[in-house]
Image 1 (cartoon, rainbow, N blue to C red):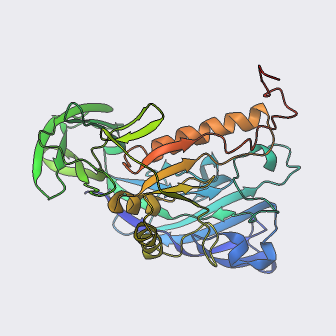
Image 2 (cartoon, rainbow, N blue to C red):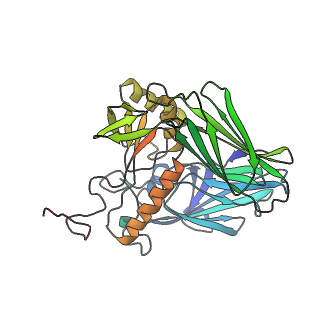
Length: 392
């Protein structure tokens, strides 16, 4: 059994009532922003409930099932077959749960989503990372606005994959993390790197552990840059008793970014950024891209205009956006989504979101800049204790 992704996108039930009574229940497409799908709920703040029923055939005790959410705005609680499996706070980053013990032939998935208001006692809107989800800007992008999927794989399985390029030393450093609970067999981790032309560079087999580290030598480095966006592929496969159990593939680029004398250097060469601010709101679907081709074509047009950099404004980039920026050779400037009120709770949530952003986008060569604070949004420098000025 190697990894298979089962989409749970499509038509779900959405209700203001956890019992999903007829008068308070709608049908909604997932992924989508609630206000765009259901105009009556465009300005709604509070709790809403999602429900999806799905079936799984031929379940084996050697399999693992992972429930993956791309992004849910803002606070979510998830039940599978009437059992609470976990919660997540944050509207921009993915989260995943191991649901192996709960999966059945017939399943019911329920998601409780809290859309904070300004007077919410626990999640005040002003104290959460929200970007331009303001009444005077572009409104709330609430609900399950990115893909939902069930990952079907074997035991054990890979949970994280980090690739660090080292152009100067002509090497790539790889770190994998795996879940090994219940493993009672001899397992190996096979790592291989394929160059941009499909040629195998090297392959390493090492005993599987919860965290594995490996170093690959890349003697003839093909750098990633805006003119030649060369992408390497890493294949990570778990074998147990010579049988493939789980497999993860990811792309990466060999590139180095430096700052010298106030200039940006990419792979040792000074680069002048010709960029644009991308609000990245979509017609008729708000935060949710209508499809991958739309995102691809948007970035192709930016490239044809002569742009080499796009600043993705106060939002975490959608995975499709970074995938095509990597492939097309467009530099991405990310912004941490801002909050409105300068409090300790807001700052703590900002730190968590930033950490999750970096972890999510770690392997993307296109990401070269991250903005922590846009202008002074969320700091309130004229009134708060954050204001420190030696010249005032």
